[in-house]
Length: 633
Image (cartoon, rainbow, N blue to C red; front, side):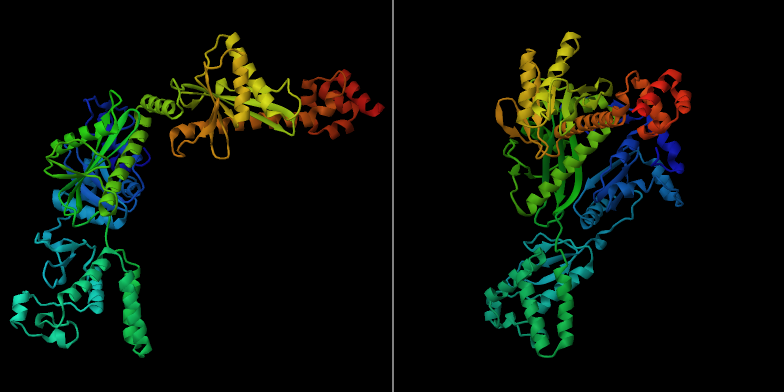
């Protein structure tokens, strides 16, 4: 509860009896998860927010939108409302009403700004400043004409014209247009330059022609083909492809410099610097994409997560993630089809085209597009990113609210990833430890339900192997471990992991075969260098995704076995080094040696001690034995 400030503490505790909504809907309706008194739905949402840029939305108990805001770091920004005293009365009132926090992850701060603008204008939340249409963001329009004009606008008209943006400031638009006009001579008049009217001599060149800003297309002094070459270069600029334009711009700068026109050269250089550092458009918004629904899916063993982005004129106006619980091991295709139908019905979507990652069967009334590259692909990737973030949040929330479900999911995933016949609820991992064959030991660590069970850890002194032989040592400890379990009728693990490659795996397998357990317990070896996982009888290792939880648990087991074994080996080696000389004294046992070392701190001081001093520490008879042992010699 340390993220909450005093002003809303009582309010947050009041929500502790609320139900945690199970994210929209599932394939079959399922009941909400009841929370404990300590954690409310809002607590959990705040703890699991991502640190990515995006927008956040505050809702009250009636699911009414209170506020939409943008953030470079969602978690830091949202928590700032709760971890400090707020002087503003309206903000304090709003915070007390917050019952749920939702968010949309985007790629950049600019994307967050544009998305915030779209959502505020669409929903007009109570605590947001009202954004009117005349204050909307500017676009660059290339007019659908024979000699296209290029100009800024805040209105999008469906007349076949091309619109690029929106841009976050009119200053940026003016810089781009100023740059374009300095490179290409374009008309600024609004005449109808049809072929018939030009041939009839209806128009005369204006002042712009005499100033050198236009090439006089109205009198036929410039061809339509030549003019459209300029327009194509302009398209490249507003799309972010500046290669050709930069080349021409640099040539102009060099010509002015060569002509000793340094002020003009400096002016062009400043614009060139701005152009080189500018990104012309956003992955969130593309004006060519309008009235389209975007769907993506991320799934695991138990659930599917379908993300939905609704686009209007290329801008995201709605985002939602639907959680679907699997009942019959449905495929991603089946889940996505169910999710699309449910979401479109729920939000009354009239879109006739959808973007999806793979083919789905939805009938002929909807056009299905599978983007491969460009703007459409980037928007689909943004949807997938939102689905992944949502899934990660649910994992974190589930770990807090429902740890059993979290464990069941991991166990089911490990069964699939490691190709096991049953879930590895009980796993044991072995590791050998020795230095040049001295004091050889081994360790066995035990994980149950994916967590360490330290009371079941075991240490082994190697008894039958001489010298540094890891293979023979592994065979000995595996044999001793499971021979003991069989004799005591203790439960056997579902999975054994040996730290090492094919050699250690073969040794462990040999021990199981001797005990008649081969085939009854799954056993694998893990090599440290590339995290290869070896199976009996298979020379080709398995490589798990570095980010999978299955590999993380295996690595945790291996590291824990290594730590446990090294600690045991180090202690044994230290005890051996300290006690060797005193152990040579006949009649002196381990307890007396420990007492002497505790008192004198070293063997050399024991040698130098007087008989009287020794008598005070270990008694008369043992003091005489120790004193005579050293001084007789």
